[in-house]
View 1 (cartoon, helix red, strand yellow):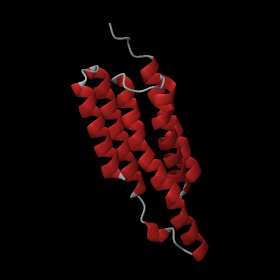
View 2 (cartoon, rainbow, N blue to C red; view 1 turned 30 degrees about the horizontal axis):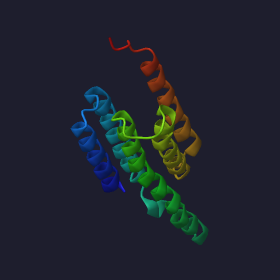
View 3 (tube, rainbow, N blue to C red; view 1 turned 135 degrees about the vertical axis):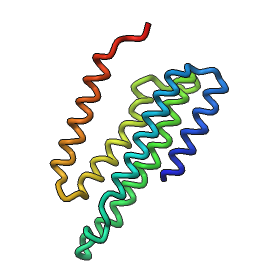
View 4 (cartoon, rainbow, N blue to C red; view 1 turned 135 degrees about the horizontal axis):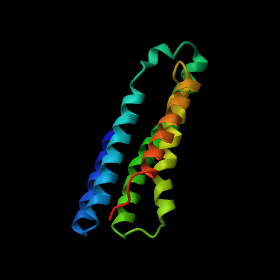
Length: 145
């Protein structure tokens, strides 16, 4: 899924670059997308799965849970492409819809990934706190002239 996300993002940014879309917007989208995808990759492999597979029930939940995890990871790549299409004015979708195409699958992936950790409530709380801190920084940065 990592490769598909990176390929989707690269092709979308390449086509938007050819269409003379705003370079600053594309750069921030590309940077945020890469940070997200590599962060998701790191989270996924942060804990070895054999520690979680302690029973048949846990194995079944782990195995079938991957349908949702992989679907969310694949949708992240598509969401990045939608955002690039929006920035290059090739999408028939608004700003909020384009944002949701990326953020909803990321949120689903993070919730599922944090569920599988040893401290799911703490990990989820840390994720929410980090998002809150990032939103404060984004809200208080000076506007572009």
